[in-house]
Image (tube, rainbow, N blue to C red; front, top):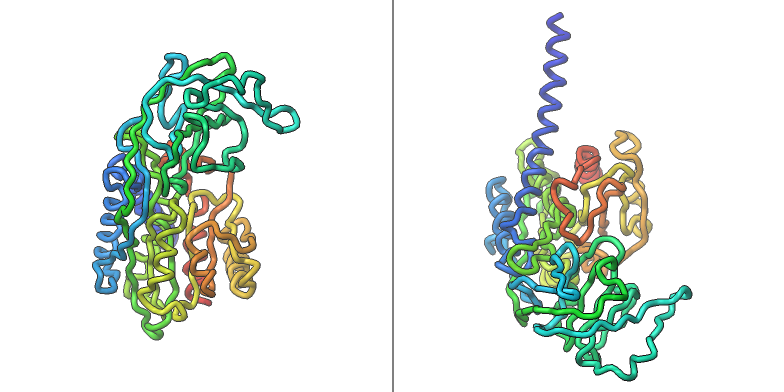
Length: 416
């Protein structure tokens, strides 16, 4: 009887231990996604607040720095909107973040403009109305349902502005915020801009910062046998920031989730009984959303030679997992990918480990381009759908397969 009770207690404490790990990760995501982080962007120093938080976590664990206080500084040009933008359609006000977003290349504007609809026909061709040759272009805002990603942006355009219609949720990005165009652009939900709407009133105030100072956050744990060879674990901590003081983009999955996982891994390997054979560097990059700028800067200004990197794992959007994981560069580094598959099949951590070809879609790429063996891994599953919108919150982050993924990474590092 006593043996059975002890076994039950052992199972209980094992479950508590697992819960505490996930509790720590969730607390990290809650903090990084909180309103006081301002979307970890470039309004109200959201990026700096987040970087200091990560630095302090490293310090608490005993993770070492490279004599630079954990920070590697760099600058970037960025257009920002510290004041709330105001949009009205035929005198009806729209809600920023929910009904519309302002594209990051937009200038300041204040005025009322006529709406001109140029919509695609059944063949997908834009149809220009007959009266287009008679309108005064500087007083017109063009409305189109063309895919925003397919639109060819020009520095100048003969219209006051441009509106992209979207069917579901508006989404934002800052990678085009390095310059300011001569016209403003919006994304607006299409049900708010039916063809009978005639006028738009726009009040937008931008602030362009040509040399915004930001930083990467970097630390390491020294290996017990091979201190001059490194595994590198990376994740970008930045996100999109905010539109004005009240509308912010939490970025829970993208990428508070990956940042939390590398901090959790740092906590694991910082314990004396888990000290790795090789050194492990932990790199939380800034300005990924602005175009992989933080990782690109590090690849050009490494704190130790890149050829000392044994393998790099980049974690970006790891909050789901019901369908397993996708491994970018899995088809490139086949032997290492096969090891991941074998470890997963042996322990049955995840439903599936799937390969993908090389892609310049996250912070692994500047290293891959310089010949550093690297994977970018993200989780798969329909349970985590929010992306680049105000709904990417901790409440929508299930961490479906976190424990298995976490243990797979540890096994990979200890086996490779």
